[in-house]
Length: 227
Image (tube, rainbow, N blue to C red):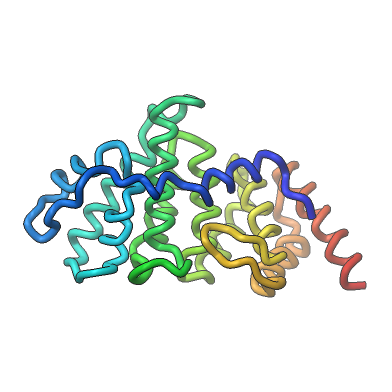
């Protein structure tokens, strides 16, 4: 199935984050407060060294400190000024979300996924001022363990009256076909997301018009491939 231009744009933003920015020199983490760490980050939460800290790529850090850093990232992603399209605040909010997505991703990156990423993506989806950021949080969840919780959360959003309901359906469709989302490798069909889409179709609880049209289109496409 084709990807809607809007969703394609969102995924391009997500999959090509400002994560290669250096964001200043890495501070001595053990001796630095979180405000000092974030001040060193400046306007580049996608700094590779910050990602590696959250993923504990080269050292172990107290969970409380990692969580405090991640909470600071959430505050940047949910700032009210990010509601303005094309603004610097919007760009910074997307950069902040990307930093969290990479920290929690199952992609082959140094270290291991930051365990607190998923719950904070839920917070961003619920609280962010920008709908684009909220939609990107949904996409990011699909590359963040535990995958079962991500699929369940997107299912519930798809069945809701939330303004991102159609994005939830579309990201499930992309994922079901093995599409690349949030660092996941391109693969064959993913049966778990196919099962969620089938349940959405049979449940009759998808009420958002755009989400319903997407789901109906997927059902027709799937049946044509699996007569």
